Length: 130
Image (cartoon, rainbow, N blue to C red; front, side):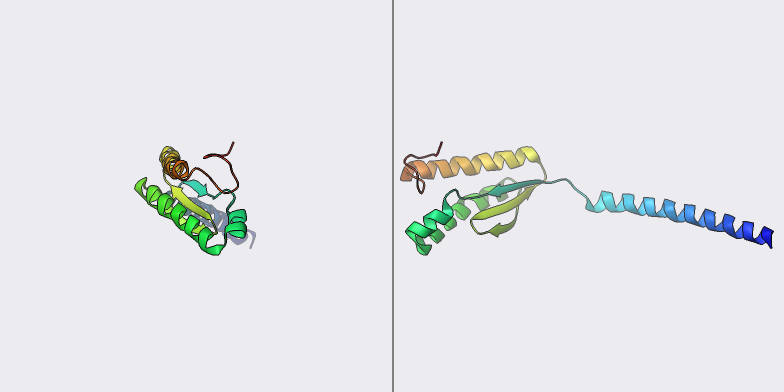
């Protein structure tokens, strides 16, 4: 009886070790196949809520549309992917951090050009806030 018990425990021990090795192998496959590092970029319109309150929904939506019309194509041009928009914000991902920074710089430069043409952001006296 004791001999059979030892064999059973030995078999269970070998089986557990085999299961643990299989779990480790499967976790590695899952990590390699599905896990990836990404860089997340968020945009946000400074003063948007106040602008909406003072200038109204139509003007606020027009500003938001202009922001999105500028930012979204530049994100896509830099191989980014727009994940979602949340109010006046865009959330996008990039596989390369440097490309994400270049995309954000392109967005800022494009917005700066428009701001300089209009000469003001909501609630500000000059083209850029300090």
